[in-house]
Image (cartoon, rainbow, N blue to C red; front, side, top):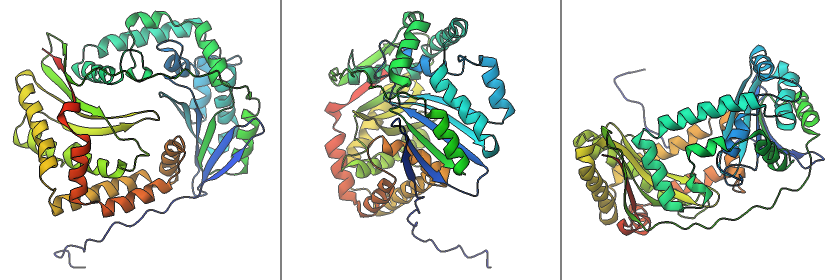
Length: 422
């Protein structure tokens, strides 16, 4: 091998998708699994269609989920923690707007013990008052820390202006809302929305017959009662424009510039993601090159598109010194105008396409990654073939398509420009 000669550059290949299988228990519970016999561990994700969108008052959904390991009818919080620690299992909780998850990674040889404890948390939690008081006290302290951060204030103000006063996506709550959460409220919400069998269990890793049997037996007692009616919320946004959150003692000013984004299922999604990547979606983006490297206004700046089942938003985010905030905003708008009027050079577009393609391959690297990707896609009624279609669209996207996306979606009059600081 002559190390003085660089290896040839080849086109990134299409990913190979793992086959996923699906079964349904008698109580209606869906089990989806990806089997990798070379693993000694497995992962289970219990995904329940409940979250911030369905909660009767602020804080309830996230509190209910986080309290599941704080005590059940059969075990205390200490006993639950010791069981998972003794068997080398890792457990996590994730509360979203439309779904809540319990995630666990465990050794196959301890499948019975760990799976049954996860099922016990789903079926037998009791929300003890003492543990709830400790949890609420910690959450209140974290909230007090967050509201001192300009980045947090700017983001919360942005989504509030975008979704309005009453929509759950705005995620509005106060310090007093924490004190309104009681064990009775949590238990009522838990029984109505979490214990119903309208959930999906994702399994990946070494999913042998023992794991399937343990899951089937442990979750068989889940009820098949109908979910309560869901209130539908209309979005009543504020008018686009400038908004400021005053923080007199702040050293930096946080900037959020954005608007409604592009849904995962939209035909323009892939081309818009390429546009976003050129503008601010990776370390070599135009915003980073201009505002970080050339101007030195910030340590980091980026843009991203967040898609949810009922809406999506797009945002530029950065933190700068207060006296550089206006100049930073102007440079952001200048880069947007460039994309609307000048075609992206072929070399730059090729680089971004390769980077985007590589990111998609990273999302599908192995059975565990593909299970996580599939878990997200199933919420939209699609599967991981989404990635194959996306890769095909990346290859056919042109500089003219990028310019068209910029003119269609990034009009300045539609932008919310939010600052938080002095």
